[in-house]
Image 1 (cartoon, rainbow, N blue to C red):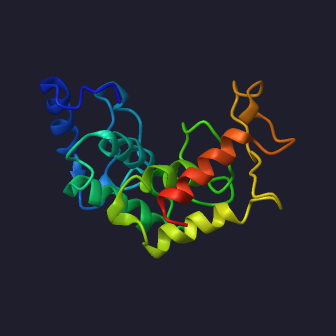
Image 2: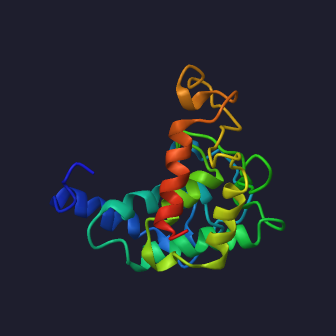
Length: 183
């Protein structure tokens, strides 16, 4: 975002990051200092939030939007949505809380996921993505505005941090997602 996508140091770290990508996206990798932490799922299960973050990075870098790593990560998130009633990899579910509208984009939730996915043209039109966007779209009021459904601590004083009336910021974000998706 700061115009340093071609900087050799940035390229090196992106190569390193994409080296951790597999056919089912990025997995949860723990720091050695956390070796006492016991993961709830097999080592080869994807880590949903890591996929969101990695894709968010690849979306803004020239030449990476159509990479194998981007494809693998994006399709992993769509596969997780498709199997959401059966799987909760690494305790990341896609239930009621996942589908609540909230900003800013810091958590693993439906709006964050579709905001990232709609930055990849190869995924536009996928039925699973359209289904997620429709879940969000159904939450519009009669004026096609959106109201925050869950407020994260620390954001209560912001316009998008209250649940009393439609949020201009949230409405803008949803409409931007829909525009990217061609809806």
